[in-house]
Length: 207
Image (cartoon, rainbow, N blue to C red; front, side, top):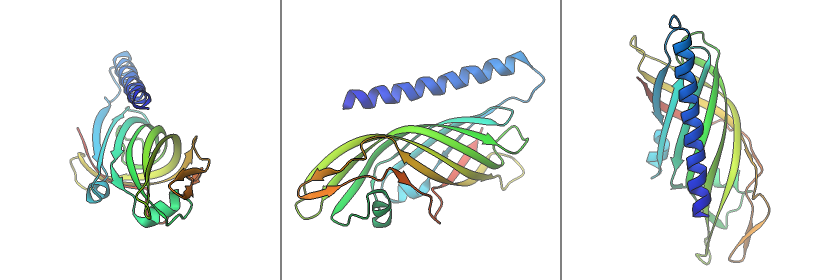
């Protein structure tokens, strides 16, 4: 299992590096176009819950952005546990880690990510499920993909600091069958719809 996680992280890093190399070559081919830019962002709610959130994204000068997200590391609040895990109140769920590659198509003509965009991602994540009555634990991993829409706002004249949000629908791609922990049967939902609360509220900086 550990080797699968390491391979997954390496694959996502290679994909991200490939996008970086492609973008540099595209700019070298036409020196008259605006240069791309790199940004970082975080979801502060994850830190408030005891976890972490680090996102890096490269904005090509025309329409597209590509990123790598590494986050999670906290116990799911009850409402989100019930959303992901079939309303099962007999368990607590730790979201151990998530690694995902993301692509965005920007509707703005700016060379950075101001305004509306649509996004898609594919990634790998891990969970630890605890049966409350017995304190028994079990862990599993799954692949996922997501698709959504978002908006990024630059509140100041200098276009560095930004605030954004997005709404996503998530598709769990494997390990959605019934699983057992102690005497409790549980399963992760295969489709997690968006809620009224944004999937991500992000604070970022563009270099």
